[in-house]
Each structure stands twice: as structure tokens, then as C-alpha cells.
Image (cartoon, rainbow, N blue to C red; front, side):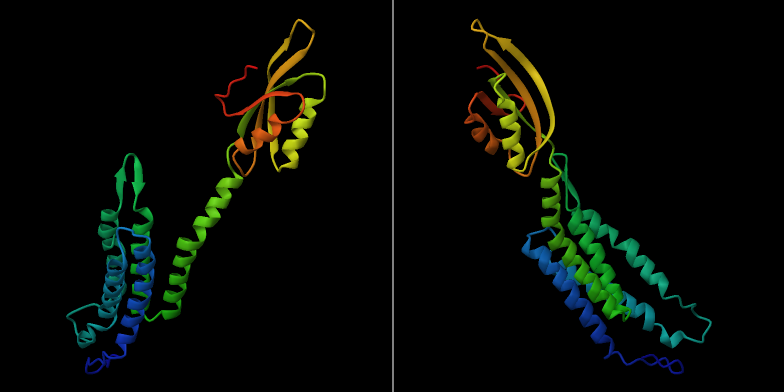
Length: 240
């Protein structure tokens, strides 16, 4: 550590902090590399090591000037410049293709890896390791969770049914839907007819919410006694 009298510095112990930054940054970069993202292991490793070196230089690189009037030391100034300067790499990773924005997560990971490098260079090894763990939690744990949430929050699906009215057919349809795990959000009667034999028919549109495509339910509903027609989707035919 720095000698405040002579300004001398034993740099060898600082290699541990630099090595920690390299290891953690490479781990984050490996995850991006495996996923074939635009910034991979080498980019993340260099950003992390560079940020750590900047921190070490900011902390210890001016020890020979301590006590002189040549400089006013403020290690936080370099850290602030790393935060703002890393944006040029992140900006280069973000691009738009056919109105879809790509590269946001990779740009954010580069930003995080710079912070990990700064923490490593600052000697905050536990904090750097914890942040690396958070990265893997977000990058690997969040996608399955988001897919589960999207399925549970899926927009209601429509199924149109033509059936013989007055025979309890609709009650049987609703019972089948609920027994298969579907929730009926809305029911609208779209058409009611009476033929020459006084046989009444009806067409209803059911709005259903569930975790599977409604097309899987259509076949079962169509096999119920009294159901004349069942189809999924807003554009389903309603004639029978």
C-alpha cells in the first residue's frame, strides 16, 4: 500500500484486485458469449479490467504527489468519468432493426461489468462478487419467470359455438371449460334462429383466459351433444 512519506507503492497486492475484476468480468462475458451476443467474453473482460485499473490508478497512482501543492487528489473524479465514459461502448451495442430495439441487455451488462471492475479495483470484492451473482440471476433466472408471467397474463381468447338452444348445451360447455382450467371472462350471444320445425339454435362468443391455446379446447367442445359448431378466433365461421 502507499507510503505517504516516500510515495512508494507495492503494486503486487493490487494484482489480486485486478485479478478479481478479470475473473468476475469474464464470467459475465462468458454468459453473453454463450448466447452469441454482440459483446462477448473479451469485451466484458477488457471493460472490467480497464475499469478496475482506472480505480487503482485513481486510488494509488498519485502517491508521490501527496503533501505537495502540485495536485489536489480526489479519487471519486476518475470513478465518475468511468460511469459516463462507458456509455460510448453501450451506445454502440444498441441498434434498431425493423422497429425492434436490440442490444439493450448486452449494453446494460457492459455497464454493470464496468461497475464490477470498479468495485474490484476499489477493494470491494464481496460487493463485486454479489453484483456478478445478481447479473446471473437477472440474465438466467428472469426469462423463465417472464415467460410464466406472460402465459398467466395472456389476453382472453375467443371461441365461437353454435348449439341447439333449450337443451342445457351451453351449461355443459361452460362446465367443460372450467373443468379444463379455463376462466370465462365474457359471453356474448351473437345470433339466435328458429327453423321451420321450431328448433332453436344460437351462436355465442366466449372470451376465455387460460394457459394454453384455445384451439385445444375446441375439439372437446365440438364433441359435446347438441353442439353444432365450435371454432377458435375472432375470424371463426359461425354458420352451421
